[in-house]
Image (tube, one colour):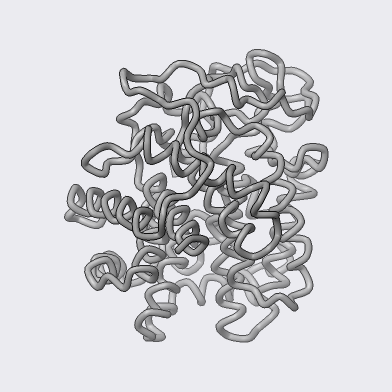
Amino acid sequence: MHRRHLLAGGVALGASATVLPAPTGSATGAPRSAASVPTAPSSALPSRDVIISVLRRVADQWIGAHTDPGDNLWANATFFSGLLALQRLTGDTGYLRYARGWAEKHNYGLSGGVTTRHADNHCAGQAYLDLYEAEPDEQKLTAIEDSLHRMTYTDQPARNDDWWWDDALHMAMPPFARIGALREDPAYWDKLYRLYTHTKHTEGGPGLYDAGTGLWYRDANFLPGAIVSPGGKPVFWSRGNGWVTAGHTKTLKALPGSERHVAEYRDTLVQLLKAAAEVQRADGFWNVNLGDAAHLPGPETSGTVFFTYGLAYAIGAGLIGGAEYLPVAARAWNGLVASAVHPDGALGYVQKVGDRPESSQPVTYDSTADFGVGGFLLAGTELATLVS
């Protein structure tokens, strides 16, 4: 879990005001390679077939370059979440076979075993649940269900401080939501909400959610009075907020509308998406720091794909207006395809493992990672549902 250790250097300390910068639509910054980054992608989505064609190209490139499907940690599990979304969209048996081989390689188990409480280790459970839905077999759910059952019922069930960083909401909210739905057991949803509420309103004192902006701090180290950007502005890490977006999106897709906390999850997602839309770059991407347009400006894919995923879901679910926000999602998608997708399907401009804007810099046209590819597949499959 090396990314969970805070990275030293490159930041200032001091008080921060939670005020978003001016919209960064014109603050495109310089590309981090010789690749050209267009500044005005189209505000209209291409056809469903065109979207799927790009998704296949990106998925096929990654699979071809990774004949060994890899570990079952959070990053690779996020890739498989995206791949299985594409498999459901296309019915491609090759994608299902590749994902099944990955899960079987790990015996549908969790890193850290069933006693783990770490959200990162629960991320693989999302793909196992997808594989269960495609080909039901209770053994596929043994590890993830056992682990969540322990947290909910037997292993310190009153403890709710496990999710101390905002990425955890993507890694572990959806498995709790989905197991609760599958077993028709709302105790999992109640446990989910208690863990979520600690992250949102208690972690570090005030919680990681900034009600004034609708954005989230990555962890307590970035709360007001702590780490700020070199320009003295707040650090709202793009991918951290992307993880929060995806966590809410997947959770809402899993929960029945009657679940008593759905309204809060919806409202929180909407506020986050609206805040992100205000600081979208002219090239369709988002910067690594949503709170400071001058802090390492440049296109970054991983935050961008998760915002696009959330926007597409929220538009389709009627949570936000398509007339206002579909152009935001379309500019993001078209910018990604024009600038980040290589001719062979490789995906660039992905900030690699880290916990803040300074992590894994510089981000270049050739920077890629499994979780970025997974997020791209999630975004495109969700967008494909909005067009014919």
